[in-house]
Length: 175
Image 1 (cartoon, one colour):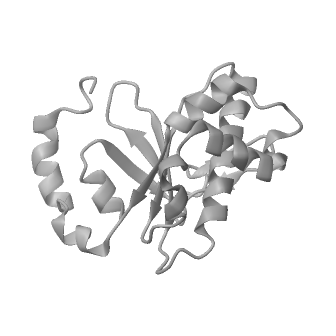
Image 2 (cartoon, rainbow, N blue to C red; image 1 turned 180 degrees about the horizontal axis):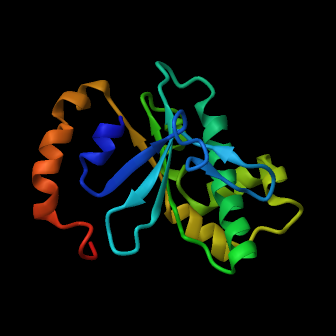
Image 3 (cartoon, rainbow, N blue to C red; image 1 turned 30 degrees about the horizontal axis):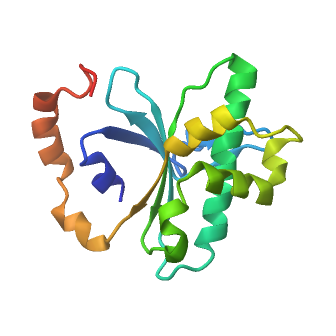
């Protein structure tokens, strides 16, 4: 899945939770949360990328876990703004091997869904009201991607990626 994401040529994910736990951890208004992968977009702003991967063979508890993921993303943004007076505006990717909540699929990445998730996980608000502007900004940066294991064979290999990366010059210009 890491190879598949990097083969988009839009991001690098050099950090994984097993070898770089600090780099894969974000601070929230409640407690720190460690994710599976971390890196950055290949553009001048180098927006951070945070990835949570769910290798499920059925939907399972993914919906509730995704709602917590949304609450954590929002809480992390508030923490950055309160601590540093700005947010780095990370991209949050939820990568699943099996779809979930398909009857709600069209609304999962919406601001209203994010607010509902915060209502279900109020600890991440730390008794603060929801800021509509922050919620809208965070909702735009959360994406759900469904990975099929067959995509592995259709993705560029590391060697192939390195052969073309310099031609694309994603690091040297704005996308």
